[in-house]
Length: 533
Ligand code: ADP
Ligand code: ZN
Image (tube, rainbow, N blue to C red):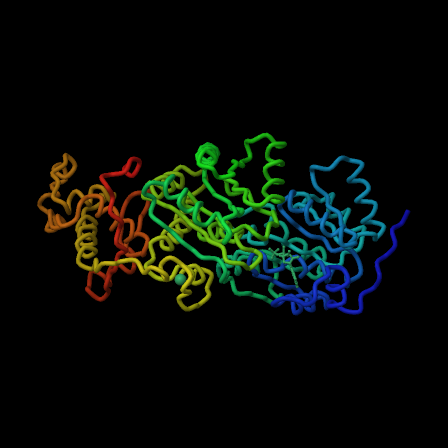
């Protein structure tokens, strides 16, 4: 039985109102829809919650044929199709989770021209069989969601995305739209080039999320700090608990932290890919339906979960990139109401992540890319300026101090570290004169502090001009200095990890042409465990 074709829409606005029940378009939506409905290509950079879906869903309703949506997340596909069906849009998906009979019915409906939208995973679309199948029907447009996955320099590269460039050759007359919530200039360029979108119109929205407050703290006593945070941010004005997400890197730590919070009266549950699917489903349902549930999760949680009133996001481990941090924190406050994000990080995070980069499979270029992502994340952690300004600058956006982040609200103490930086960098310079010898932070600090280690003795480094000139700082303080020099780009790691070298900006510091400011490190009561190599 053929389903009836939907009523024709007089305009995009008509479709928005009758199908989706919204009054007006937001931001660039109307312009993007016009571009696509008119047969042109588009590249759309818009933050999470900005309303990207309508940008291809409405043109698909306005044009003849089926809109083919490439989406990498099966769970997300399922939710989007359900939501569309509820609005009376004829949508379906093709993916590996389907039974053959279900798939056959979707294929039949597509060929019969009974679908407005068809969602498909990139690896499936790339098979010759799937392309031949699609060619037998009529396609109104291609939407490539999560388009940053095509960027090899990005943080979420998926090789299957590269082959999507072929769509342009095979269907030159079909308009294409690439969408992403990740927006560095490098990623933007790669999307345009690799997906052959040279003639596309570009729509770049602001990535500012003014309702989100950003806070980043040094990790001192993590559990106590986290509990304080959840107790203050995890309740509304009437003292009722609100929903939040705590992100941790390992499965084991999500479980331990959830148990710790639960033992302290927080309605917290762990969530990670290793848990029983039924339990995961129940956790997710409770999070979506009830108020005040806190999920302690690995980063996969939250992708494709449309919960507008997540009031806080906490990170207990350092994210691997600014993009990742932005996306994860972006899951807070999609309803536009005030929300808080909090990240705790320590030297141990840096050491651990450097090691992970070191041991990661892939070539040198790949490891360099990971290292540069980490460096940018560290720079955000160490900045004494506005967090938001720093974050937006990373995405190529200029802004004023926000007055709604920790550094704006309580400007951190900073100290003039110009002389200390010069002492450190001139030691690097002197050591670089030795051919083939390269040293890590520990050895440099030993020289500066005048510590006669076997290594110092072996290389005769006690005769260097900078020997013992850095005794005004303790070893721990020096480590903080080195971490901040790296974070500010005033020194860099070179070659295999751990070796400290000069960066382009080092020369300015050495020449006295540039002042260096360090964020004052908090007082540590003794040396906390796990903070040393
Ligand atoms: P994104 O994919 O950019 O994260 P979505 O497409 O999921 O964003 O949209 C985010 C939310 O905003 C959804 O709940 C969506 O229904 C809603 N939305 C999108 N456009 C509009 C609009 N013009 N008016 C009102 N709500 C909108
Ligand atoms: Zn600020």
